[in-house]
Image 1 (cartoon, rainbow, N blue to C red):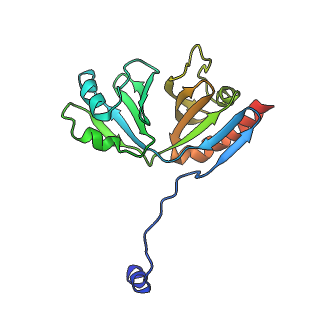
Image 2 (tube, rainbow, N blue to C red):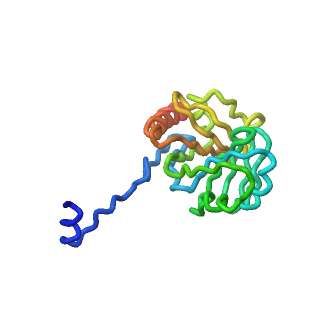
Image 3 (cartoon, helix red, strand yellow):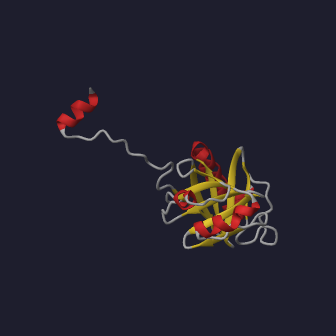
Amino acid sequence: MAKAAAKKAGSSTAVERRPALAGETFEARGVTLAVLPPAERISLRAPAASISALSKALGVKLPEKPKTSTDKDARIALWLGPDEWLVIDEAGKDPLADCAGVKALHSAVGVSHRNVAISVSGPAAAAAINAGCPQDLSLAVFPVGACSRTVLGKAEIVLYRPTEESFRVECWRSFSDYVWTFLTEAAKDAAA
C-alpha cells in the first residue's frame, strides 16, 4: 500500500545505501585518518594451478609469497594465505565479473559492501596502529607493499602498506565504528 501511495504521489521508495563512516576524517600531529571511498572487492580462493588464469583475467598478478601484494591500474591483490587473496578495485571495476569467465578452479565472492577502508597516514601512522596491533610495522619487517590479516584491538583487520608512511586498514563495516574510534584515540596518543 505504501508503494502505491508513493507512486501516486510521484515519489520514489528507493532506499539509498550510505557507506559507513562516510566522509569522516581526523588529524592529530603526525597522523591523518580518512575513510576511503567505496571500492569493489572480492575474496578469492584458488589452488596454485589456477593463479595464472585468474591473474590474466584480473589484470593483476596474484602474489604468491606471504605478506605481499601487487597492484596495477587501481587494482590491488593482497596475499592472505597460500590459496587466498583480497582483491580491491579502487576504480569501481568489478573483479567478480572478471573472474566469472575463468574456467580454472576458484571461488570468488563479492565482499564490497562488507568492508570499509580507512587510510592512516603520516610519520606517526605506524605508532597509532601499533597501539592495538601486535604486528611489527618497522620498514625492515613490514615494508612498502606488505599486507597481512591481523587484529586492531578486538577487531580483525587486513592491513596493507602502500607507502612508507601510509596504511590501508580494511575492516568489516559492522566493526568500523569501533576501529575508527580506536584509531582516533591511538592517533591522539601517538601525537603526544
